[in-house]
Length: 433
Image 1 (cartoon, rainbow, N blue to C red):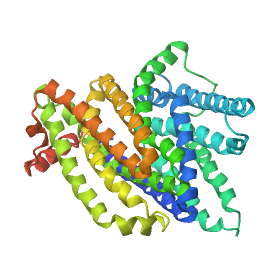
Image 2 (image 1 turned 180 degrees about the vertical axis):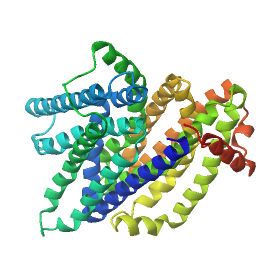
Image 3 (image 1 turned 120 degrees about the vertical axis):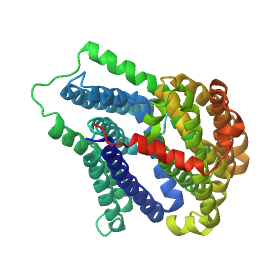
């Protein structure tokens, strides 16, 4: 399949999936309001950290060897299921032991079902969507995931006692993750790995998968904490309503980061293939164009957000606006870094990203300890912005020093940047197998 078609498919189907996620998020926010929806997504955030740790980024290794063909697809699929099962059992046992030993309250026992559904479902989704993508199939997994999200959206109006209670819907919501994971796995087996004899990767293959995955593991965990560790501070120091408002601000920022990641991945092969002398110039062009685009996006949201956020999410989300304004400088700082972090990942120098993220995480943790108790979610947003700006300055200083590019050359925007970015995309999308 031609690369241009692959990129179109990726953008189209992943866009449809993200749209369904956004719609589900809005419906839950409106129905459960800020206080309760904030608690729902705080629990989801806790489970997501468990998935990130227990998964050990193994899905990246599975995706790589699915694409390369070095390990049979059936063995990789079986390994994915076994790793998910093992991780889920470990999580279940740890929850049981923690409650029995008094490390966490007995009330957390009611989260067993959501925890099992979320951890097992998300791990299966992570493994098998990565495997689908490695097979250059973006339509099937995203179509399935989006369809289940739409069903969950359609069920929300019936959770007022017509068919089931609002609490029952929460269980249905978490069960949706497990259904997504199981159906995605079944679909992959049916399409690419019809079971015959039960086979798993041999020791040599497992070592290769682990080595490839562990390289990305530390960076993924650090990215997760840099983006979301403020949730725990807000939950501890602020009200449930404030937590709900803040999580929606954070989720809005994460939604804004989707476009930079797509643009960076679309032009990255052109960057790497351009030769050392032009890499820094092309990365700077992409960063400047992203900055200009997001200046206008953020200005638009700043001008309309005061009434737009409560209109979309509901009247209880009237605390979002100020926090979003304070987060804007950090958002602008981060969007410019996407091509830079992609560059260091592409040249296998993730260590630079890891070191920078460690310092950034320290800034965010220290700032939240000092500022959030006094200034609440506005303080947390300010700290996140400062942390993202620090990340920007630190990583850009390394990049500039290595590539001998001045501040003026990196930040000076011109209309020619848009033309050159278009040329990079055209070069990358030229028909090829």
